[in-house]
Image (cartoon, rainbow, N blue to C red; front, side):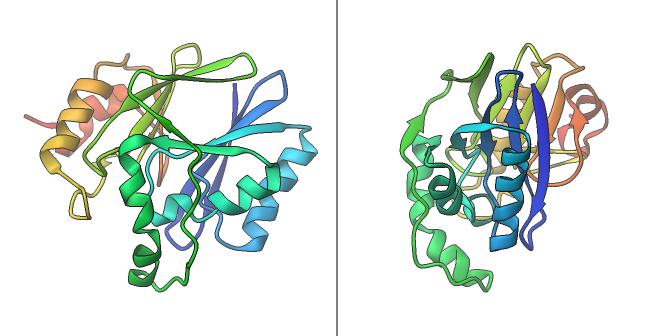
Length: 212
């Protein structure tokens, strides 16, 4: 599996395009906000002869869903998120107002996911890990064969996701990280929703939020 990372919108959100040798691809956390950012994703897919199969959201805060409708339309695909994110999705217009955006249309989610589900494209399989805390329906996507986990806004390099927003819970996010992510092998690369990549092993040792 190969991964193309884009950094989009004023929140410097990481949008990931995952693809493998079959040419099939998915997009995780479509954060593209402007037409030029949307065009950047389309151009990369076209230049690499990729067929985007669907979109996946790790959660539905505004910075992670700004490009959902545009990319659903551009690629003619469905979008997925955890069932418990649907109420959060309905608040996107009000989230937008808080941050000075003008969004009237709620991003479309076509299929809901549950903990333990597997999602597949090409020869690649990702496991859905429910990690509530940043939001109630936050998920991470784990590829055992590639030693990679996309952690959304649950776990960052040296930090964790905010829990002071609607639906957030500090106790829940610490429990999610401790019981769902730190149980993965140390060498697993964690690709977060903001900032640089890290590894599970580094966060186990150095993340100040995960100290006893």
